[in-house]
Image 1 (cartoon, rainbow, N blue to C red):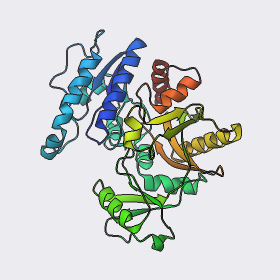
Image 2 (cartoon, rainbow, N blue to C red):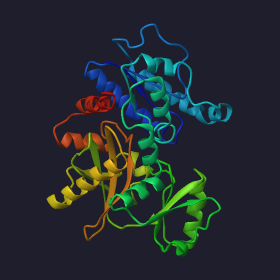
Image 3 (cartoon, helix red, strand yellow):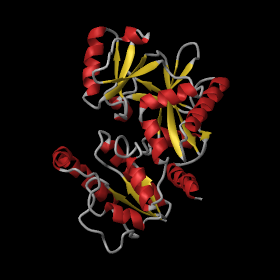
Image 4 (cartoon, helix red, strand yellow):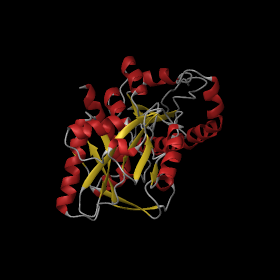
Length: 342
């Protein structure tokens, strides 16, 4: 197949996206697909005559994107539109676009909407489901309405009352941007002073934040592919919680797959992962994150519709536990995504 791997973009998760795209592109080439990388934001100066060449330098393409990252802040000040030159024309020529974008303008359904209007096939969920899952406030409401356990929480807008007592909550709480990703701008706060500072910083990312009751416990994640849960993986940060640094700095976490929990707890968590996936009307694949307290009560925190896809990311580790290597997984995600178009 001729495949465009879209990576980069202009979100706070740009660098992680480039790493995902690089791994995916290499894996698909190993499976004899003619995959190429493209950055939807910076685009490309021109379209080559051979859009999907037999020989392709993935490292060179990724390095070009990383160099352009230095221009991101200034470019965003001077540009109104999202898509760079020629990238959509390239996508039109592909059999499918593999979305390796993370965070805003990629995971939130906006790029998916454009591709839908163009009649271009792509991996992952449709625009509506992507948008719902990206908004942690909406996700929480959907989970509560569909019997998926989730921590008590509220969505705050700038200027609204932020007193916890008004919402029947007490410290400690978690404060996080409503639509952020990779735990950017997430704070665990224990008192009023920390709470005020956390709100200030979280509101610097966007105009809505989620405040939820902090649950002490073990952290887990479950991939759901084509509606079926993969093995549970446990993430144990060596220090702190599963924040941006711990997610992407090598050696910051101990990741165990399958997780060392009982068969009944495993089955229960997989059930809630599938239920959360269904409630949000997700498609193809997603990753749902959980926390479980000492009594075995589990809470679904969020759903990631375009989760990290480097060879050592969580979903590849879960796939490996059932005998599926990384290139096979990348091909599987294309296969299940194409079901949307049947």
